Length: 183
Image 1 (cartoon, rainbow, N blue to C red):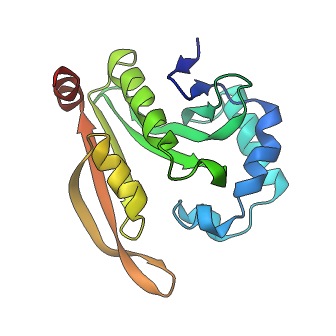
Image 2: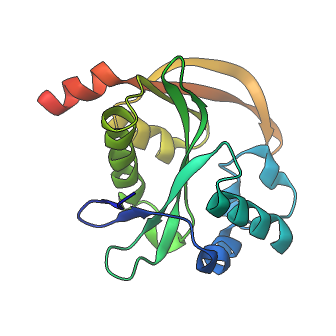
């Protein structure tokens, strides 16, 4: 499949040379604190290599892309689809900007916009959903800008930083995506 491109990024395939870039963030609390509980424990090189190898070989149910620079295709982060439900035409979205220099500069939003186009116009899915932690305000605002709507909250379901936090469920439907394009 061709790469998905925008002005500042390319969504490309996973490559073995992404390993050192992934290793830079998988044990960085500032980044992993916003991610799944799998990152509570230190990630070994073997853990990261296994994940990367499985993504390259298509062994996981997760399908995704590396977010990269347009010229050198250098690693910025990852954006993946998980829980793909072909019958009901939905999928979950997961994203991480792994390079601190790229945080807060709109690269995540740009990657999500590319992925939405792919999800709705190529895969013909009807729904894209995600979870975001209540304290991750930057991500929450990004998802709102990308057209995601808050559907609900799992109240005080997450324990982090010595207290309980809500997990917010958000989604965007194909018709909402199309309506936003028409505006």
